Amino acid sequence: MELFYAYEADGRVCRLDAEESGHCVRVLRHRAGDEIHLIDGVGTLFRCRLVDDSPKGAEAEVLEAFPGWNAHPYRLTVACCPTKNNERFEWFVEKATEVGVDRIVPVIGERSERKVYKTDRAARIALSATKQSLKARIPEIVEPLSVKDFIGQTDPADGSLKLIAYCFEGETKRISIQEALQVFGGRDITILIGPEGDFSPEEARLAVEHGYVPVHLGASRLRTETAAVLAAAAVYLAY
Amino acid sequence: MELFYAYEADGRVCRLDAEESGHCVRVLRHRAGDEIHLIDGVGTLFRCRLVDDSPKGAEAEVLEAFPGWNAHPYRLTVACCPTKNNERFEWFVEKATEVGVDRIVPVIGERSERKVYKTDRAARIALSATKQSLKARIPEIVEPLSVKDFIGQTDPADGSLKLIAYCFEGETKRISIQEALQVFGGRDITILIGPEGDFSPEEARLAVEHGYVPVHLGASRLRTETAAVLAAAAVYLAY
Image (cartoon, rainbow over all chains, first blue to last red; front, side, top):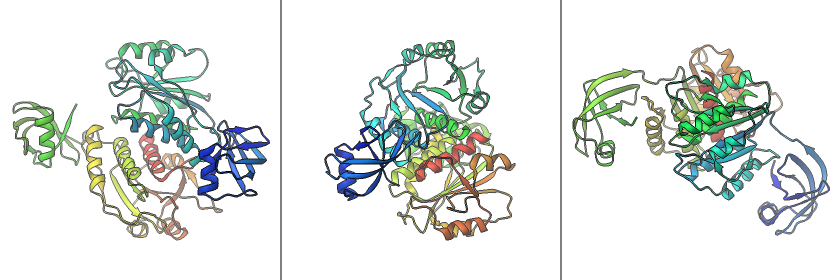
């Protein structure tokens, strides 16, 4: 099954942008009358008939709509510090999208080597991985903000599960991410993953003050992007 | 903690090859008398004193040995079909090594697009990821063989858990990988992951005849390399 992305979908007609139209019409040689499948990127799959096979702006008529198609039974935010090497963070975006994530927040820590992050490439990768893994909802890639600002936006009493992967040397009262997920009965989860140089002690303390539970990801020392994907995998496997 | 790899370690002296020596002496500027940590790649960490700081062939005297250092409590083989894009398979090698794997077998399926695979780059990546993730044992990268030959070498009665991720359309009697791991009490696990075009029905049938349990990896449609890493992650998280 091949999915296309409709930048506009009003429930009756789906419109493809130039890139998707080119792929649909030029590469895959679909013609008016063909049945194709489109996603609106916010959760709905449409079975459609192609009515305009222009390779610059194709249009399709909706035959059937499937809201919530292939949705996962949780709502996961992964806030992760962009890695020094951009490709590693992009790899995390692709893999987390395949496994299932709802919101990716590039957060800049006090010890982050990378202080600037542009989200445009990540957004394209997330779209591609969404179609490839047969999902109808593209994860939101939030504009970067500081770790402290992100934590500051947290409502400690919103009933969601908030986890921070951090060493907390000395005062190690951490549980495994699996235990944390097992105890939690809800569906809203946020996981905070630090940079190569880890969170600063203040960032970690601030997180705990805002209701973040310190967790560990097992005995291996993992790279930032591996930790972020493993955390997403742990949620995926637990639900 | 920085680890170096000793290509020769007799318990008394550790010898570094030209690459490791250059990294140790030229890049990190270690000098004779410095304390360094080396791994032998087969499970032991050595605390050593550098006695010869030649950048072409350094040597260190063993002060203390830690056999089984940071070993994981299972023995995992992942047999996975190399992807068309080599980088994707290499990424799996890196991530599976970080998480913890003992043996990686590049298997060539009847529907594999890539029929030839050279293991030299993967071996270097596995070494680097082993050191980076603080392990003393480098996963073995086996020379490629066909899926059928690999399955043919399986002893159905050796007490290990053998899993195959395959759709088995129609006759779907699959359990999740987590369920399979939960029921199993042992430590020897083999997981077989197919190519982009999946296993052929004969390969899948042969696997089941040889004791492989069909498992699924959840609701997402995952790329080959993502499936392989998720499978390794499921084992890592279960132990």
